[in-house]
Image (cartoon, rainbow, N blue to C red):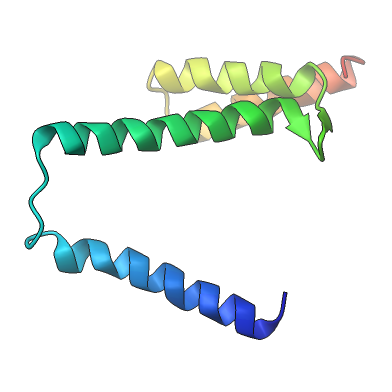
Amino acid sequence: MTWIDVAVLAVGTFLIRLSGPLLRGRVDLSEETEEFLKRGATVVLVALVATSSVMVENEWAGWALPAGVLVGGVLAWKRLPLAVVVVAAAATTALLRLGGVD
């Protein structure tokens, strides 16, 4: 990947992000479409979390990482502060690995 590629991706990303505020008042979406888009974003996020919590460099991550992600997910669901969620998830993974769980 060259610097030109990076620059093109950066400009494209910026323009896509800028289009939201610029078009917000000009484009009307139906309530069903807005709900569909919100659910689509949630599905993509869940898929990303699911794959990155069980796979590392195209290999099984072991049991410690998914356990940490599960702890973080439960604490986030309980609406604990983000710092608590992150520290608890990392601590769970670290302690399991320290204990020999791979």
